[in-house]
Length: 353
Image (cartoon, rainbow, N blue to C red; front, side, top):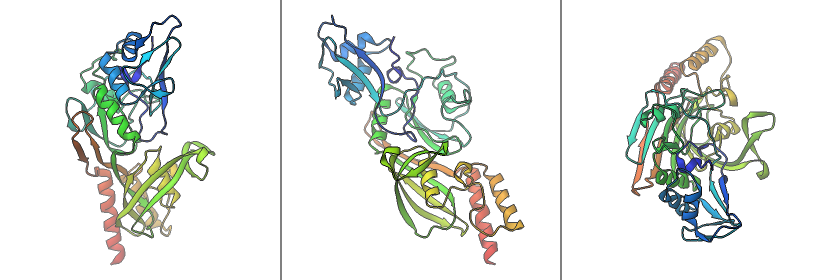
């Protein structure tokens, strides 16, 4: 049996902050005695729980290769030919247990839904987080009450993700056509994504762009870092602009041109302005201001008020993969970041009196 994760609707390793490239999800090799056969028919016969329509959707998006070249549905498979299914994210295969967890759904139709994820919620089960995740909640929302069978089309598929302690918008595909279309837009960097972040320090300019490769930190595999070596990282581009200044911290808007792991967190830290509260990248220590008792206590109170990196995925825009309509969604800052900003506004006013 071929584990054809994308075609049967299980959750992928998403694009939002994963390295990008084409990854093989499965391959088929035509037997020596194989009679010449049309590609889409060959794939349908050799993949369990897969309809011809699903296969044709994948071929149309360019995710099926015959040999090393993108295939067409009417191409002929001959003895010894290799058929590969590739996607711009790695495979993943953790059993999903549906759980009745409330979701903040901002949009839903027959093909997709957009959800506003709270900070603290893991997107996908794994690495010690096997329940209580967004995907567990989505499985329940889609009508499942037991772990889905391989061919269950109700599962819903995430094609990108945001970090556990980042809040904000995510799009979920509900069928193959939507999934393939959305994955293609993420791969082509045509998705509109805007974040708001509170960062340490007072940036010297009102706007700027970070265009720098990001790769694994050689000294800490849980971190990523900017690198000058293209062979050790992936190109990442973040556009930022100042929205409000508080002297010691700054509210910025960040627009992603690419989607790498921890991209905004790494890029802002590389500028010397890590995200406030981001422990992994130096944002959970005093980075600006004189360290005296009253100020240090104020900062501790801020960390308690917003006990995570102050980063929110507030804007998401894309072309509907089925209708072709342009969709745009905005999610307001969550309560912890709103209260943190108000606390800094009050502090700044009092400092000027």
